[in-house]
Image (tube, rainbow, N blue to C red; front, side, top):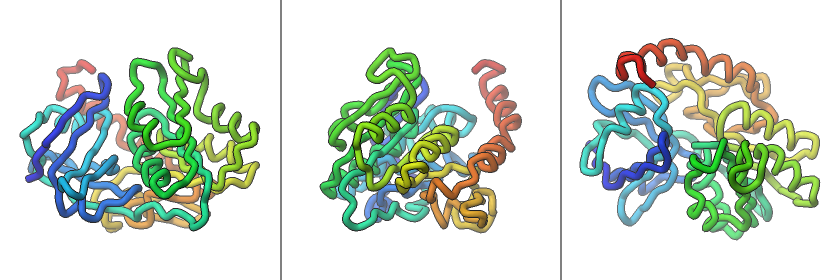
Length: 277
């Protein structure tokens, strides 16, 4: 059992939980994830480790309440426990030696995963531009935290209600064309966002790493559910990733596969809510 020591509602749909998991906290690195199961009837769900504290023996997860399993997780309170938390899983993000300037791009709840990337790089002395995109001001999360781990924080909103009006891709292109010479770009968020970040960087030959979120079950490479096509070859996000060269990823295939169980998930949520979302 894994005790929840802190729970914070970041916005209407996004929740932060700090969980006692000393063995995971001792080894966790940026880019890795856990798989949780709320109870013996729950499904196995992957979530990236948003932060960790080795001294306290805790890890932090941040998730959007979007399906049945995240609804069940969000219903837990401080002091409650999660049945299973397995990790750290996946390959930690690898940073090239000598990098001096990086853009970390996050979209929506993906900013919770962009945060540990920026934190790691900033702690290494890298000049970090953190570009964080949200639909509107009222759903912005982790602004102070992101500001503390970046050289410059660019908040973008689709409707212009806060910060820069436009998409993260617009701001990234503006920075590149304005003379920012990025050694690398790291993009984390909705698949379409990552796809178009890669389209922005490709003409400039800027290395772009994306963190993929395909359907995942066991987290050990045996089920094959998380397979993705990268550079024309099959890779498994749980053991080969989740980080991949974004210029080599077949994003259209990934988006199609991610929608495989959408109707089943919607039906499950309807059963849990009595037909109300």
